[in-house]
Length: 444
Image (cartoon, rainbow, N blue to C red; front, side, top):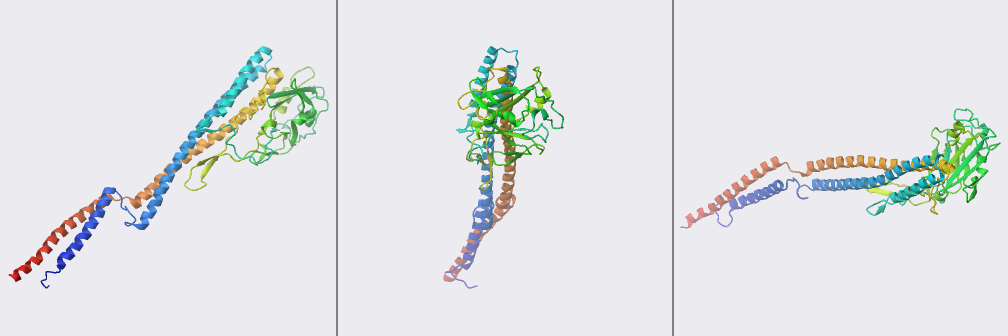
């Protein structure tokens, strides 16, 4: 090799190696200090992109879990309000049963009425419960009711013979097993309707009256008179009951034929909160067997006003439209049939009124329990959703860790190696720089 002084190639080659070792040491130091094998796209372009998408997924899943927990908190507030209403309705059921007992005087019933009025007012307070400023069970967050006229009350009796028609005479009525109800033409029947908090009753001799013919009689509440057919009409005599608020066809429980009466006016303004039939013989004795069957007109479809879709949306997924919709029905006293829009409350001032109020409370309690069931099922679902989101976040984070995180033992080994190589290169660069000085001996 020629002895030159202008270009010290040994030193240049050693310097190049020194720079490479310094760069490798710097990267090793960055990985060890950060704990990540990939610190920038330059380290691993595809791995960086994949791990970044996974990080976004983890953050989204964590936010979904927060959304789920907040949604669950909201549902618990709603559940508390409805649970309180259920407790009130259970107490009211006991009170109206007490009022129906003739051991009470009119003054006693007036006292019960005052307590009932206060309890109904409290039900309205419960319905105005809020979460983060949002009213929950006042009807402002219900599902869509598409029918322009709303949904009418439907009352279905599945206890009578499946062969029963609207034109079947009361004296010919049979139970589900085909046994006669032993109703006679000289028996008396009392019919009660409760609408807008007002109770209308009428009592007449059965004669040749048919089941549908009951509705042709005039009932009174002492101040007003109304023909029953202006309140209810015969809707169905088959297995189909009608369509509910969502437009879904509702059938009888056993898919057998049943009698269904429908309110003539749709929406909560026209709902029939209670329909009660009571038969006594000519001596005044109660026909318990017949009453047990006839007085079994249960609310199969509740009255609802037409409404847009105002259901709550709980975002629980990382993609658009991955959500749970929660429709909360109206839990105010008017919607439950306990009060009219004019402020008139369910009346128990007489034995007949109190007797009719029992069915009203049963229907109101069923509405509240249905809402409580809906809220409870949503809470249960949100619990499962939260657990699933936590597991998904953990698994995605584990996958991201496999790509992004550094193996510290391996990186420390690499760091130590690069550190030794750097020091060796520095030492050799010093030696290479000494080589040019040997040329000076020739110049002496």
